Image (tube, rainbow, N blue to C red; front, side):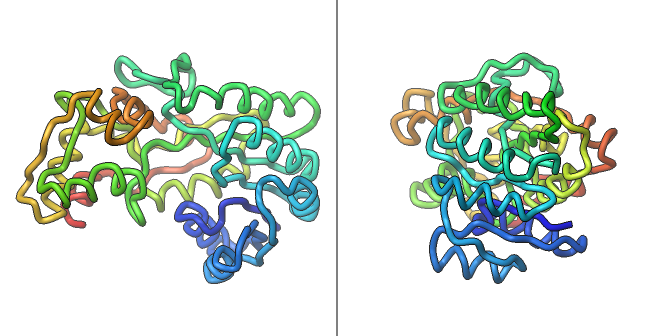
Length: 285
């Protein structure tokens, strides 16, 4: 199958391109710079020069493809929806896989699935209108699918590394927020890449949580990261106000208590997470 993919030079994108190529697909990937072009080519894709605001480029690339996977991070809901619309118009009846995120469910009060009510922190509140519009295309013959990744680890481990591990290395202790008893719904990069590929065959209008089904507490993650960073397990608690001051509004997302299950993707797509011991992986880094 011929796939058009955005966000291909990012760490999720490179992993997804690699998985697509391993499974026999041909990939064109959006690249906004020479550096991004080199990255997507190295991952196994052909480059299409442009960015998310180049709607004609997106539309034409999607029209050449049999399916689209949209991974690129937009700077606003308006930009994301405009890009999604251009690509859905282009791909027509082909599958369009859109990236959401698990934070939209807020605190989950126990283990939940895709039927949970939305209660997003401000940083991701814009996603609901975009996802509703994307899914509405199913009524007009489109094949929209949404993947909602949890908090990533493995590979570049971007958010956890930037906001917790690197500051912890500098201060001598890995931080967590409040008592650290809130759960994080984690997903390994390699498992997420396989889920995106599996989602190409999903029924129109489907939504899948991209989570590993293992939901350790934030303090457990901090302790494991502290071992992996050579800090002898040293951690430190930040109040939510302190975390907001250091991290900005994303601190409210890190403070969420989320326990989520991948049962739907396992049941409908035959996708099973292979990485089920995240704490050991954090401790070994």
